[in-house]
Length: 302
Image (cartoon, rainbow, N blue to C red; front, top):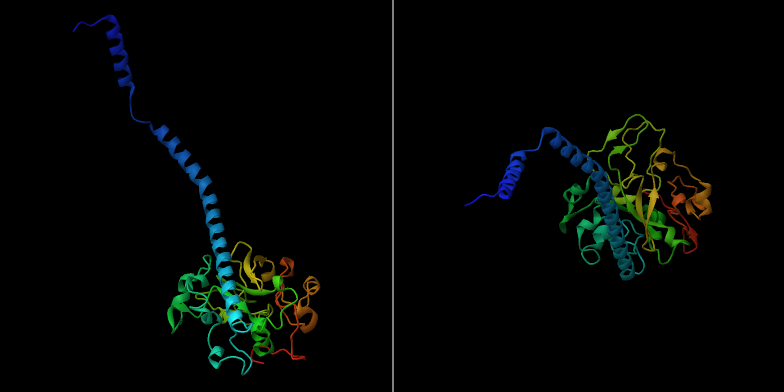
């Protein structure tokens, strides 16, 4: 084979390029690692935010499913919510001993996971804690609690919401995120919650909590599960956010001007100590506490 000057130059150039090929230097590797680290640091907060948003969205979906099941229950039970302590003679005696949500299974609610909020740190323990005999997958604690006021007012008589419907049902609390999640407020110490003490999955309007009491056993249900607040389901099936962070730091009162202006029964008629969610236009009750013309209110154990 005859080599020309041109082919010799090409061969020399190729050989020179091959000779210059080498592995990446330490500096180049460090630059690449730094760039990857920077990208990860930018992406992870966004990913976490997306995951929190997804969890919050799933929680809202769970509450809507619970609301729908409660609505169907009311239709089939002459307007009654599944009260735990109904007036004598109005419902079967067995209803006085079971958690409200057990009555929803399986006819109205088939999936026990609906009762667990994805942001509840105790969600994996719900079904394992004192499981209900009928279904070992359904525990007697939940991530969500039902409004204790209609469940206990008039000895459970207010739970006939189709008869004593509040004036503002779209602003009346029905079910909400239930704590405590991490810590308990007390006047002398902060206790770590080792397990869900969930008040039988009922929302107490005042929690029995006195910020000036000496007891260290008080474990209020109010929490900040989703950012600075919780989700609440109303009587009409809507799900709304309630900002609880500030409320948790304030003493519970009997009267709030903005709450009374919104039609709160506790402020205007009963003067009961209660948490106020008026800033988010949410109220414990906005209607009468009268049954058959007789005004009465029976507190738990009263």
